[in-house]
Image (cartoon, rainbow, N blue to C red):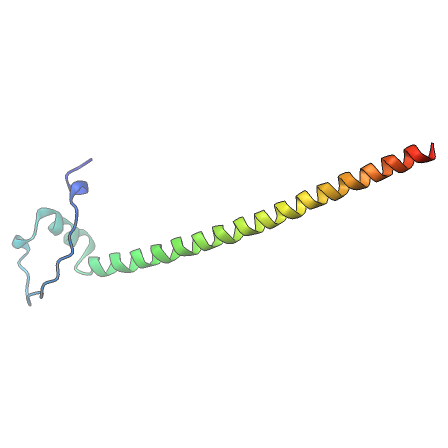
Length: 98
């Protein structure tokens, strides 16, 4: 694991100055700003919101599919029981007529 992956960000609530000297930023922050631009935090926030929404939707779909599967399993089990009973009745009827 590299050094930047070990950094645990902390929420900092401070008033931003009008200008920020890049020399005051860590090298990692400078690299991020250089690569992604000044709007990187905004883009990251938008991305994370979309990701969260997609995850919530996926979980809801999984719950729906699980409920449907369980309903179908119950219906299939009932159909198998009904078929077994029907086969038993046919067998008993055949034995009674022979």
